[in-house]
Length: 448
Image 1: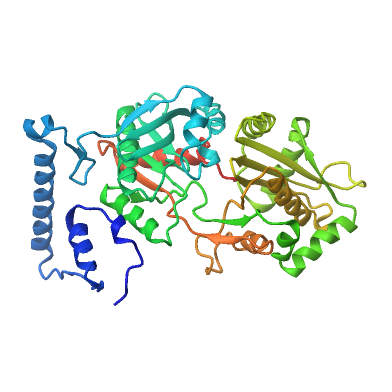
Image 2: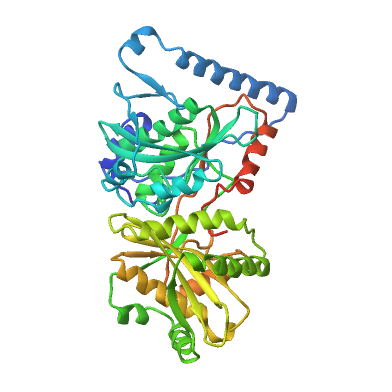
């Protein structure tokens, strides 16, 4: 037996959750059992039995979908495929047409992610994605979502949707969670999407995260086989003095930072004219490490947009290009690109040459990146990517993770990407073709 470490006041009211709240109030403890299991002694008969159960469930769903006029008149609706009646006044979706209004809206929701920024929608708009910025307004509260969609199969009227690192809301407000998920589902239906993906930064190792997972499963969402962004990340709290940041590093990492300086490596904040040189480094890194590199125009759009945003003092979004150089080298030996939104900085793109690798330019680069985040008044430096399982020695992120850990990065696990299949009218092959478009058409905002 184990006590569930969650606040029962935050549990949903409907179904067995209400009964569970009542029982746990008396100090009841949960007992996990293996559940019911079947053994088919007559395979054909068992298959017929299962088919009958499926037919029964389908009939029940059909009856629920055909609600009596009295219920419809009362303002009730069925939310998705879970059969749960939604509130009489469902959430309202309101389009947001200007960058200033979008920034104002996002200022009132917690943990706004840079991939939900107005600027990221503009970047994706240059790669055949459409960005719908929507305010979700309900009695439960307010949320926001930048809904990206595209028609990947040319003239075939099939669309896919994606809400990168969103929707943005207070995920501890379970009523609002339901409203926001319903809004994503409804907008996907209205656009004619066959499925929609979300991957909010919700931790999966907390009671709140487990309740969000329950809400997703209850509404028919499924854990995605296509984790577009990194599922997990790592972070460093930069609200401390530089001495404390250095003290949080491993001894070897502090030594390497000083070694780079002694060997003549310098780091400068670069600008638009330096983007081609950085792309050259990035191309070399991709060829060496075996990851996909897109054409220069794709990165130029992203980097230029964020650098220009950085020049706008009133914009919560921004970015920086840092280049490591040596007086004996004609070109930079390493570089990285940072994204910023509000109180968080993300390490998005990193690149290095074989030249001067023994002089530890990457260590000095990351040290200057942490200092840059501090100067922006940020609270968190997000290292953007960590192993799916930090204990798995074969995880492809282990080498990168060890490098980040040396700087004192702290691991943070998230719920990952979840898909909602809006339409089942299309064949599995069509759905697979659409999913393959994630890589081909640049759905990902990751550094790869």
